[in-house]
Image (tube, rainbow, N blue to C red; front, top):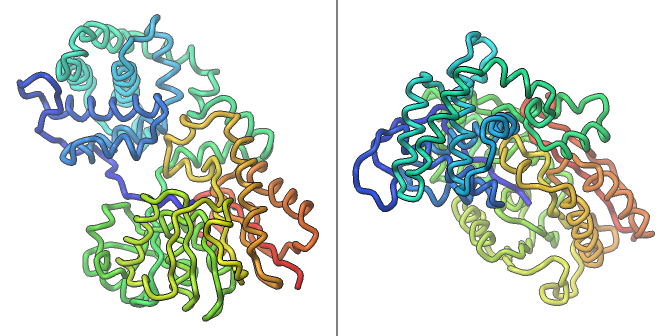
Length: 464
Protein backbone atom coordinates (compact mmCIF):
# COMPACT_ATOMS: atom_id res chain seq x y z
CA UNK A 1 0.00 0.00 0.00
CA UNK A 2 2.34 2.70 -1.32
CA UNK A 3 1.13 6.29 -0.86
CA UNK A 4 2.89 8.65 -3.23
CA UNK A 5 3.81 12.15 -2.15
CA UNK A 6 2.64 15.29 -3.89
CA UNK A 7 4.63 18.43 -3.28
CA UNK A 8 2.45 21.05 -1.64
CA UNK A 9 3.14 24.77 -1.54
CA UNK A 10 4.39 25.98 1.81
CA UNK A 11 2.63 29.34 1.68
CA UNK A 12 -0.87 30.08 0.37
CA UNK A 13 -1.21 31.58 -3.07
CA UNK A 14 -3.36 34.67 -3.18
CA UNK A 15 -6.31 34.01 -5.48
CA UNK A 16 -9.21 36.14 -6.60
CA UNK A 17 -11.82 33.65 -7.80
CA UNK A 18 -14.70 33.48 -5.31
CA UNK A 19 -15.50 30.11 -3.80
CA UNK A 20 -19.17 30.49 -3.00
CA UNK A 21 -22.45 28.69 -3.33
CA UNK A 22 -25.80 30.41 -3.64
CA UNK A 23 -24.32 33.95 -3.61
CA UNK A 24 -23.03 35.94 -6.55
CA UNK A 25 -21.03 38.81 -5.11
CA UNK A 26 -17.20 38.66 -5.29
CA UNK A 27 -15.17 38.01 -2.16
CA UNK A 28 -11.61 38.80 -1.03
CA UNK A 29 -9.00 36.20 -1.95
CA UNK A 30 -7.99 34.96 1.49
CA UNK A 31 -11.60 34.40 2.55
CA UNK A 32 -12.04 32.05 -0.41
CA UNK A 33 -8.97 30.05 0.56
CA UNK A 34 -10.03 29.91 4.21
CA UNK A 35 -13.48 28.61 3.32
CA UNK A 36 -12.06 26.02 0.92
CA UNK A 37 -9.56 24.82 3.52
CA UNK A 38 -12.27 24.73 6.20
CA UNK A 39 -14.38 22.53 3.94
CA UNK A 40 -11.47 20.12 3.56
CA UNK A 41 -10.74 20.04 7.30
CA UNK A 42 -14.43 19.51 8.08
CA UNK A 43 -14.43 16.59 5.65
CA UNK A 44 -11.52 15.03 7.56
CA UNK A 45 -13.40 15.46 10.83
CA UNK A 46 -16.25 13.66 9.10
CA UNK A 47 -14.04 10.70 8.15
CA UNK A 48 -12.89 11.58 4.63
CA UNK A 49 -9.21 11.67 3.71
CA UNK A 50 -7.66 15.07 3.09
CA UNK A 51 -6.51 13.95 -0.35
CA UNK A 52 -10.09 13.16 -1.36
CA UNK A 53 -11.42 16.36 0.20
CA UNK A 54 -8.90 18.56 -1.59
CA UNK A 55 -9.73 16.89 -4.91
CA UNK A 56 -13.25 18.33 -4.63
CA UNK A 57 -11.96 21.91 -4.41
CA UNK A 58 -11.81 24.01 -7.60
CA UNK A 59 -8.37 23.74 -9.21
CA UNK A 60 -7.62 27.46 -8.95
CA UNK A 61 -8.15 27.37 -5.17
CA UNK A 62 -6.55 24.02 -4.45
CA UNK A 63 -2.91 25.10 -3.88
CA UNK A 64 -3.75 27.74 -1.27
CA UNK A 65 -6.42 25.60 0.40
CA UNK A 66 -4.01 22.65 0.51
CA UNK A 67 -1.31 24.71 2.23
CA UNK A 68 -3.79 25.93 4.84
CA UNK A 69 -5.37 22.51 5.40
CA UNK A 70 -2.04 20.70 5.73
CA UNK A 71 -0.86 23.23 8.29
CA UNK A 72 -4.12 22.83 10.20
CA UNK A 73 -3.85 19.03 10.29
CA UNK A 74 -0.33 19.26 11.74
CA UNK A 75 -1.61 21.50 14.53
CA UNK A 76 -5.19 20.32 14.93
CA UNK A 77 -4.78 19.16 18.52
CA UNK A 78 -4.06 22.73 19.53
CA UNK A 79 -7.00 23.98 17.47
CA UNK A 80 -9.39 21.52 19.13
CA UNK A 81 -8.23 22.49 22.61
CA UNK A 82 -8.54 26.25 22.07
CA UNK A 83 -11.85 25.90 20.25
CA UNK A 84 -13.22 23.89 23.16
CA UNK A 85 -12.43 26.76 25.53
CA UNK A 86 -13.94 29.46 23.35
CA UNK A 87 -16.99 27.77 21.83
CA UNK A 88 -19.31 26.51 24.54
CA UNK A 89 -21.61 24.70 22.13
CA UNK A 90 -20.31 23.21 18.91
CA UNK A 91 -21.93 24.88 15.88
CA UNK A 92 -24.28 22.70 13.86
CA UNK A 93 -22.17 23.41 10.77
CA UNK A 94 -18.94 21.34 10.69
CA UNK A 95 -17.51 23.89 8.25
CA UNK A 96 -17.84 26.68 10.80
CA UNK A 97 -16.18 24.53 13.45
CA UNK A 98 -13.29 23.88 11.06
CA UNK A 99 -13.09 27.54 10.03
CA UNK A 100 -12.88 28.66 13.66
CA UNK A 101 -10.15 26.09 14.40
CA UNK A 102 -8.13 27.05 11.32
CA UNK A 103 -8.47 30.78 11.99
CA UNK A 104 -7.40 30.33 15.63
CA UNK A 105 -4.22 28.54 14.54
CA UNK A 106 -3.33 31.24 12.03
CA UNK A 107 -4.16 33.98 14.51
CA UNK A 108 -1.87 32.36 17.07
CA UNK A 109 0.97 32.47 14.54
CA UNK A 110 0.24 36.11 13.71
CA UNK A 111 0.43 37.09 17.39
CA UNK A 112 3.71 35.34 18.17
CA UNK A 113 6.37 37.83 19.23
CA UNK A 114 9.33 35.53 18.72
CA UNK A 115 9.58 34.60 15.05
CA UNK A 116 12.50 32.22 15.76
CA UNK A 117 10.14 29.70 17.34
CA UNK A 118 7.56 29.89 14.61
CA UNK A 119 6.80 26.92 12.38
CA UNK A 120 8.48 27.81 9.05
CA UNK A 121 5.58 26.25 7.15
CA UNK A 122 3.02 28.48 8.88
CA UNK A 123 1.07 30.77 6.54
CA UNK A 124 1.66 34.28 7.87
CA UNK A 125 -0.89 37.10 7.82
CA UNK A 126 -1.62 40.05 10.09
CA UNK A 127 -4.11 39.51 12.89
CA UNK A 128 -6.43 42.16 11.47
CA UNK A 129 -6.47 40.48 8.04
CA UNK A 130 -7.18 37.06 9.53
CA UNK A 131 -10.11 38.21 11.63
CA UNK A 132 -11.59 40.23 8.78
CA UNK A 133 -11.17 37.51 6.14
CA UNK A 134 -12.39 34.72 8.44
CA UNK A 135 -15.57 36.70 9.08
CA UNK A 136 -15.91 37.38 5.37
CA UNK A 137 -15.58 33.66 4.66
CA UNK A 138 -18.89 33.07 6.45
CA UNK A 139 -20.59 35.31 3.88
CA UNK A 140 -19.54 33.21 0.89
CA UNK A 141 -22.11 30.49 1.48
CA UNK A 142 -25.73 31.16 2.28
CA UNK A 143 -25.97 28.50 4.99
CA UNK A 144 -23.07 30.09 6.92
CA UNK A 145 -24.03 33.77 6.98
CA UNK A 146 -25.62 33.58 10.44
CA UNK A 147 -22.28 32.52 11.96
CA UNK A 148 -20.61 35.85 11.22
CA UNK A 149 -21.02 37.09 14.80
CA UNK A 150 -19.79 33.83 16.34
CA UNK A 151 -16.59 33.78 14.27
CA UNK A 152 -15.89 37.44 14.97
CA UNK A 153 -16.50 37.09 18.72
CA UNK A 154 -14.34 33.98 19.10
CA UNK A 155 -11.36 35.41 17.23
CA UNK A 156 -11.48 38.77 18.99
CA UNK A 157 -11.67 37.07 22.37
CA UNK A 158 -8.61 34.99 21.46
CA UNK A 159 -6.78 38.22 20.60
CA UNK A 160 -7.58 39.62 24.03
CA UNK A 161 -6.97 36.46 26.09
CA UNK A 162 -4.36 34.55 24.07
CA UNK A 163 -1.77 34.22 26.85
CA UNK A 164 -4.27 32.98 29.42
CA UNK A 165 -5.93 30.59 26.97
CA UNK A 166 -2.63 29.03 25.90
CA UNK A 167 -1.72 28.58 29.56
CA UNK A 168 -4.95 26.64 30.10
CA UNK A 169 -4.07 24.10 27.40
CA UNK A 170 -0.38 23.78 28.32
CA UNK A 171 -0.93 20.35 29.91
CA UNK A 172 -3.33 19.09 27.23
CA UNK A 173 -1.59 16.14 25.52
CA UNK A 174 -3.40 16.58 22.22
CA UNK A 175 -2.60 20.29 22.15
CA UNK A 176 1.03 19.70 23.08
CA UNK A 177 1.76 16.94 20.57
CA UNK A 178 -1.00 17.43 17.99
CA UNK A 179 -1.94 13.76 17.96
CA UNK A 180 -4.91 11.92 19.50
CA UNK A 181 -4.30 10.88 23.11
CA UNK A 182 -4.62 7.16 22.31
CA UNK A 183 -1.91 7.53 19.62
CA UNK A 184 0.44 9.32 22.02
CA UNK A 185 -0.02 6.62 24.67
CA UNK A 186 0.51 3.83 22.12
CA UNK A 187 3.83 5.30 21.00
CA UNK A 188 4.92 5.97 24.57
CA UNK A 189 4.30 2.31 25.42
CA UNK A 190 6.01 0.97 22.30
CA UNK A 191 8.96 3.39 22.27
CA UNK A 192 9.55 4.68 25.81
CA UNK A 193 12.86 6.28 24.85
CA UNK A 194 11.95 7.84 21.49
CA UNK A 195 8.19 8.53 21.52
CA UNK A 196 8.70 12.27 21.82
CA UNK A 197 11.00 12.47 18.81
CA UNK A 198 8.55 10.35 16.81
CA UNK A 199 5.72 12.77 17.54
CA UNK A 200 7.92 15.76 16.81
CA UNK A 201 9.08 14.30 13.50
CA UNK A 202 5.49 13.61 12.46
CA UNK A 203 4.79 17.35 12.59
CA UNK A 204 7.67 18.31 10.29
CA UNK A 205 7.28 19.03 6.59
CA UNK A 206 8.71 15.95 4.78
CA UNK A 207 11.17 16.12 1.87
CA UNK A 208 10.26 15.39 -1.73
CA UNK A 209 12.07 12.18 -2.62
CA UNK A 210 12.44 10.62 -6.07
CA UNK A 211 13.62 7.28 -7.43
CA UNK A 212 15.35 7.50 -10.79
CA UNK A 213 14.13 5.04 -13.42
CA UNK A 214 17.44 3.49 -14.43
CA UNK A 215 15.73 1.78 -17.37
CA UNK A 216 15.29 5.20 -18.98
CA UNK A 217 18.20 7.33 -17.81
CA UNK A 218 20.92 7.77 -15.20
CA UNK A 219 20.79 9.60 -11.90
CA UNK A 220 23.59 11.89 -13.07
CA UNK A 221 21.57 12.90 -16.15
CA UNK A 222 18.55 13.71 -14.00
CA UNK A 223 20.67 15.78 -11.63
CA UNK A 224 22.11 17.71 -14.56
CA UNK A 225 18.63 18.41 -15.95
CA UNK A 226 17.53 19.59 -12.52
CA UNK A 227 20.62 21.75 -12.06
CA UNK A 228 19.84 23.49 -15.36
CA UNK A 229 16.58 24.61 -13.72
CA UNK A 230 18.35 25.58 -10.47
CA UNK A 231 16.91 22.57 -8.65
CA UNK A 232 19.23 21.01 -6.08
CA UNK A 233 18.86 17.25 -5.69
CA UNK A 234 21.04 15.16 -3.36
CA UNK A 235 21.73 11.51 -4.17
CA UNK A 236 21.22 8.60 -1.79
CA UNK A 237 21.09 4.82 -2.21
CA UNK A 238 21.28 3.19 -5.65
CA UNK A 239 18.80 5.52 -7.42
CA UNK A 240 17.39 8.03 -4.94
CA UNK A 241 17.27 11.84 -5.01
CA UNK A 242 16.10 14.28 -2.32
CA UNK A 243 15.07 17.73 -3.52
CA UNK A 244 16.17 20.73 -1.49
CA UNK A 245 12.68 22.24 -1.77
CA UNK A 246 9.38 20.43 -2.45
CA UNK A 247 7.67 21.57 -5.63
CA UNK A 248 4.92 20.41 -8.03
CA UNK A 249 6.13 17.13 -9.48
CA UNK A 250 4.74 17.62 -13.01
CA UNK A 251 6.90 20.74 -13.36
CA UNK A 252 10.15 18.84 -12.80
CA UNK A 253 12.33 17.89 -15.81
CA UNK A 254 11.80 14.32 -16.97
CA UNK A 255 8.28 13.81 -15.64
CA UNK A 256 6.68 13.14 -19.03
CA UNK A 257 9.69 11.12 -20.16
CA UNK A 258 9.35 8.72 -17.20
CA UNK A 259 12.80 9.46 -15.83
CA UNK A 260 11.75 9.15 -12.20
CA UNK A 261 9.00 8.33 -9.72
CA UNK A 262 8.02 9.97 -6.45
CA UNK A 263 8.86 7.46 -3.72
CA UNK A 264 9.92 7.89 -0.12
CA UNK A 265 13.43 6.80 0.77
CA UNK A 266 12.15 4.13 3.15
CA UNK A 267 9.90 2.65 0.48
CA UNK A 268 12.83 2.36 -1.93
CA UNK A 269 14.25 -0.49 0.18
CA UNK A 270 11.37 -2.86 -0.63
CA UNK A 271 11.94 -4.17 -4.15
CA UNK A 272 15.72 -4.87 -3.81
CA UNK A 273 15.10 -7.06 -0.75
CA UNK A 274 13.44 -9.71 -2.91
CA UNK A 275 16.63 -10.08 -5.01
CA UNK A 276 14.65 -10.80 -8.17
CA UNK A 277 16.25 -12.14 -11.35
CA UNK A 278 15.13 -12.08 -15.00
CA UNK A 279 12.47 -14.66 -15.78
CA UNK A 280 11.19 -15.05 -12.21
CA UNK A 281 7.47 -15.22 -11.46
CA UNK A 282 6.78 -12.31 -9.12
CA UNK A 283 3.60 -11.16 -7.37
CA UNK A 284 3.06 -7.61 -6.13
CA UNK A 285 0.04 -7.77 -3.84
CA UNK A 286 -1.87 -4.70 -2.59
CA UNK A 287 0.11 -2.82 -5.21
CA UNK A 288 -1.63 0.53 -5.81
CA UNK A 289 -0.58 3.17 -6.73
CA UNK A 290 2.42 1.25 -8.03
CA UNK A 291 5.64 2.76 -6.70
CA UNK A 292 7.06 -0.60 -5.64
CA UNK A 293 5.55 -2.25 -8.74
CA UNK A 294 7.56 0.04 -11.00
CA UNK A 295 10.69 -0.52 -8.94
CA UNK A 296 10.42 -4.28 -9.43
CA UNK A 297 10.17 -3.84 -13.20
CA UNK A 298 13.10 -1.44 -13.20
CA UNK A 299 15.28 -4.04 -11.47
CA UNK A 300 14.65 -7.05 -13.73
CA UNK A 301 12.61 -8.45 -16.62
CA UNK A 302 10.24 -10.57 -14.58
CA UNK A 303 6.85 -12.15 -15.15
CA UNK A 304 4.93 -9.82 -12.84
CA UNK A 305 1.37 -10.16 -11.53
CA UNK A 306 0.09 -6.88 -10.09
CA UNK A 307 -2.78 -7.33 -7.66
CA UNK A 308 -5.03 -4.79 -5.96
CA UNK A 309 -8.60 -5.01 -4.70
CA UNK A 310 -9.44 -1.50 -5.95
CA UNK A 311 -9.93 -1.41 -9.73
CA UNK A 312 -9.76 2.38 -9.83
CA UNK A 313 -6.45 2.45 -7.95
CA UNK A 314 -5.16 -0.29 -10.22
CA UNK A 315 -5.82 2.04 -13.14
CA UNK A 316 -3.40 4.46 -11.49
CA UNK A 317 -0.80 1.68 -11.41
CA UNK A 318 -1.27 1.14 -15.13
CA UNK A 319 -0.93 4.88 -15.80
CA UNK A 320 2.27 5.06 -13.75
CA UNK A 321 3.77 2.09 -15.58
CA UNK A 322 2.93 3.64 -18.94
CA UNK A 323 4.55 6.95 -18.02
CA UNK A 324 7.66 5.08 -16.91
CA UNK A 325 7.59 2.92 -20.08
CA UNK A 326 7.49 -0.25 -17.98
CA UNK A 327 4.17 -1.75 -19.11
CA UNK A 328 5.25 -4.68 -21.28
CA UNK A 329 4.28 -8.30 -22.05
CA UNK A 330 4.52 -10.40 -18.92
CA UNK A 331 2.94 -7.72 -16.73
CA UNK A 332 -0.57 -8.72 -15.67
CA UNK A 333 -2.85 -6.39 -13.68
CA UNK A 334 -5.69 -8.00 -11.71
CA UNK A 335 -8.33 -6.22 -9.63
CA UNK A 336 -9.10 -8.73 -6.89
CA UNK A 337 -8.60 -9.42 -3.20
CA UNK A 338 -5.32 -11.05 -2.21
CA UNK A 339 -7.31 -13.32 0.10
CA UNK A 340 -9.42 -14.87 -2.69
CA UNK A 341 -6.56 -16.72 -4.36
CA UNK A 342 -8.96 -19.07 -6.17
CA UNK A 343 -10.16 -16.12 -8.27
CA UNK A 344 -6.79 -14.97 -9.60
CA UNK A 345 -4.07 -17.58 -9.01
CA UNK A 346 -3.22 -19.97 -11.88
CA UNK A 347 -1.76 -22.60 -9.48
CA UNK A 348 1.80 -21.81 -10.59
CA UNK A 349 3.89 -20.82 -7.54
CA UNK A 350 5.64 -17.46 -7.37
CA UNK A 351 9.37 -17.09 -6.81
CA UNK A 352 8.88 -13.80 -4.98
CA UNK A 353 5.87 -12.11 -3.36
CA UNK A 354 5.77 -8.50 -2.20
CA UNK A 355 3.03 -8.18 0.43
CA UNK A 356 2.56 -4.47 1.06
CA UNK A 357 -0.36 -5.14 3.38
CA UNK A 358 -2.96 -2.61 4.61
CA UNK A 359 -2.14 -0.86 7.88
CA UNK A 360 -2.93 2.27 9.87
CA UNK A 361 -0.24 4.14 7.87
CA UNK A 362 1.11 5.49 11.16
CA UNK A 363 4.58 5.81 9.66
CA UNK A 364 3.62 8.35 7.02
CA UNK A 365 1.74 10.96 9.06
CA UNK A 366 4.30 13.66 8.29
CA UNK A 367 3.36 13.28 4.63
CA UNK A 368 -0.34 12.70 5.30
CA UNK A 369 -1.08 14.56 8.58
CA UNK A 370 -4.82 13.85 8.40
CA UNK A 371 -4.20 10.13 9.07
CA UNK A 372 -3.72 10.67 12.80
CA UNK A 373 -7.18 12.29 13.05
CA UNK A 374 -8.87 9.66 10.89
CA UNK A 375 -7.65 6.62 12.79
CA UNK A 376 -9.14 5.09 15.94
CA UNK A 377 -7.46 2.79 18.46
CA UNK A 378 -9.62 -0.14 17.38
CA UNK A 379 -8.35 0.23 13.79
CA UNK A 380 -5.11 -1.50 14.79
CA UNK A 381 -6.86 -4.73 15.74
CA UNK A 382 -8.85 -4.64 12.51
CA UNK A 383 -5.79 -4.16 10.29
CA UNK A 384 -3.86 -6.85 12.19
CA UNK A 385 -6.64 -9.34 11.46
CA UNK A 386 -6.76 -8.37 7.78
CA UNK A 387 -2.98 -8.55 7.49
CA UNK A 388 -2.98 -12.05 8.97
CA UNK A 389 -5.58 -13.25 6.45
CA UNK A 390 -3.69 -11.73 3.52
CA UNK A 391 -0.32 -13.12 4.60
CA UNK A 392 -1.67 -16.64 5.12
CA UNK A 393 -3.31 -16.57 1.67
CA UNK A 394 -0.19 -15.24 -0.05
CA UNK A 395 2.05 -17.78 1.67
CA UNK A 396 0.12 -20.51 -0.12
CA UNK A 397 1.29 -19.20 -3.52
CA UNK A 398 5.02 -18.99 -2.67
CA UNK A 399 7.21 -21.61 -4.37
CA UNK A 400 9.58 -23.82 -2.34
CA UNK A 401 12.73 -21.74 -1.96
CA UNK A 402 10.73 -18.62 -2.83
CA UNK A 403 10.47 -15.44 -0.77
CA UNK A 404 7.69 -13.37 0.78
CA UNK A 405 8.36 -9.80 1.87
CA UNK A 406 6.05 -8.30 4.49
CA UNK A 407 5.89 -4.51 4.20
CA UNK A 408 3.91 -1.97 6.21
CA UNK A 409 4.12 1.82 6.44
CA UNK A 410 3.35 1.58 10.15
CA UNK A 411 5.26 2.07 13.39
CA UNK A 412 2.77 0.29 15.67
CA UNK A 413 4.38 -3.03 16.73
CA UNK A 414 1.10 -4.96 16.42
CA UNK A 415 1.14 -4.36 12.67
CA UNK A 416 4.87 -4.90 12.33
CA UNK A 417 7.23 -7.00 14.45
CA UNK A 418 4.47 -8.74 16.40
CA UNK A 419 2.74 -9.60 13.13
CA UNK A 420 5.98 -11.03 11.71
CA UNK A 421 6.56 -13.14 14.79
CA UNK A 422 3.00 -14.46 14.71
CA UNK A 423 3.36 -15.35 11.02
CA UNK A 424 6.55 -17.29 11.73
CA UNK A 425 4.85 -19.18 14.55
CA UNK A 426 1.94 -20.20 12.30
CA UNK A 427 4.02 -21.50 9.39
CA UNK A 428 6.55 -24.23 10.11
CA UNK A 429 8.03 -24.01 6.60
CA UNK A 430 8.79 -20.29 6.94
CA UNK A 431 12.35 -19.15 7.64
CA UNK A 432 13.00 -15.52 8.47
CA UNK A 433 15.79 -13.87 6.53
CA UNK A 434 17.72 -10.67 7.14
CA UNK A 435 15.73 -7.47 6.52
CA UNK A 436 15.70 -3.93 7.98
CA UNK A 437 12.84 -4.61 10.41
CA UNK A 438 11.36 -1.45 11.91
CA UNK A 439 12.44 1.84 10.34
CA UNK A 440 11.45 4.78 12.50
CA UNK A 441 11.05 8.21 10.88
CA UNK A 442 13.43 10.02 13.20
CA UNK A 443 17.09 10.09 12.19
CA UNK A 444 19.07 9.57 8.97
CA UNK A 445 21.14 6.41 8.54
CA UNK A 446 23.91 5.27 6.21
CA UNK A 447 21.31 4.28 3.61
CA UNK A 448 18.53 6.79 4.21
CA UNK A 449 18.35 10.59 4.36
CA UNK A 450 16.64 12.51 7.14
CA UNK A 451 12.87 12.86 6.95
CA UNK A 452 12.08 9.41 5.56
CA UNK A 453 8.79 7.72 6.40
CA UNK A 454 8.34 4.92 8.91
CA UNK A 455 8.32 1.40 7.41
CA UNK A 456 8.59 -2.20 8.53
CA UNK A 457 10.23 -5.03 6.58
CA UNK A 458 10.25 -8.76 7.34
CA UNK A 459 11.51 -11.26 4.76
CA UNK A 460 10.65 -14.98 4.75
CA UNK A 461 11.61 -17.91 2.56
CA UNK A 462 9.79 -21.23 2.19
CA UNK A 463 11.90 -24.27 2.93
CA UNK A 464 12.49 -26.27 -0.23
